[in-house]
Length: 244
Image (cartoon, rainbow, N blue to C red; front, top):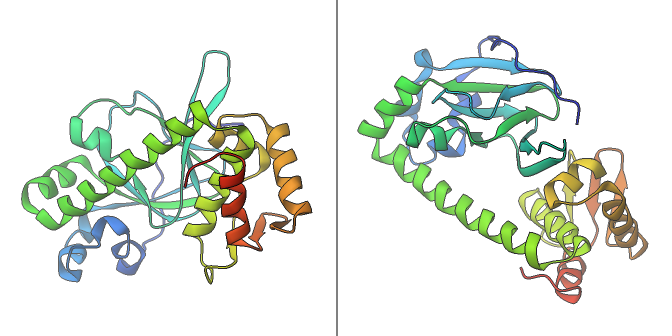
């Protein structure tokens, strides 16, 4: 991925309170509590390919994603890109540095044009002290993230590339809107982006997607991938050796 170096944070046009009050970080807070934060948060925009934060940055703010898709990644000295997770609208990032006060642990890169709000460090620290509802959501999400990263570590060490692709697609399909039998993933990551997420190269990812298409399990058109049979995709994960 071609990454544009970090640029100064740029203010976006004013957003309505509903833009950020529905973020999952605020799910246990009252509307009045969330609205009281409005004057203290920053509205930001970044373009596709821009780096929002960089590993080792010293900034304790928490960012909430309103529009677009982000990738948490790192680069090895060889140049190889390692992807940790995609962040979709309604998600957030920056909580780890906000909690321990240490520099950022990963890069956050915009996969498309994005719109965010930032809770400055001073506001975050006040919420830590004064808002049990805020802390409840944060702790729940930290537990969920720990479980997800444990699963990914297992997959990278014990599961084939094809199976990792199927598991990742099943995760995305489960998170997407659907009827439980089918699902639409949009925007779907490119084959190269999916390879970064599953710790592989683009070619084996393409082979597996083509195989799933030949089985009428998925169908892709541009940046939209439709899972035609969720049960069949789950069966493929089981058949080729993965764990749900």
